[in-house]
Image 1 (cartoon, rainbow, N blue to C red):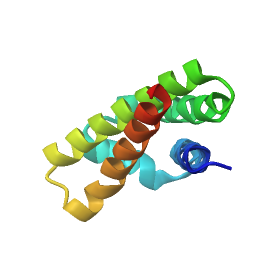
Image 2 (cartoon, one colour; image 1 turned 30 degrees about the horizontal axis):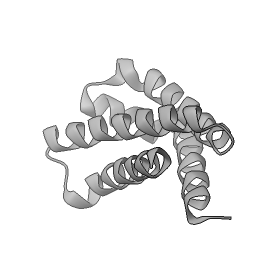
Image 3 (tube, helix red, strand yellow; image 1 turned 90 degrees about the vertical axis):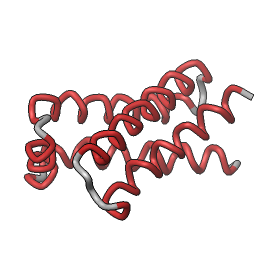
Image 4 (spheres, rainbow, N blue to C red; image 1 turned 120 degrees about the vertical axis):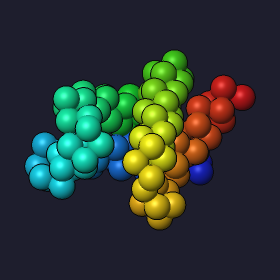
Length: 112
């Protein structure tokens, strides 16, 4: 297994967990309320789940990998923006920034 495939599987698994967590954890819903974005919670969870599935499929299909990694990078970029707007600490903001960088890296390595 190449390091890129390992990173894809890690990212996809993470987003699968985050997407499911929205529907089973009140903490995730409370975060969206705190952000003032509760109407986007289900959409965000759906996009995370779709992106995760796309990353898994993308191991065999480069076009889907490009779309999924780009979409998840954009989603996490927006997440970083929300964290900055909320004046969250660097520690609290770091997962969104990490997943933005991870999916941007996957995207750029795929496009090489």
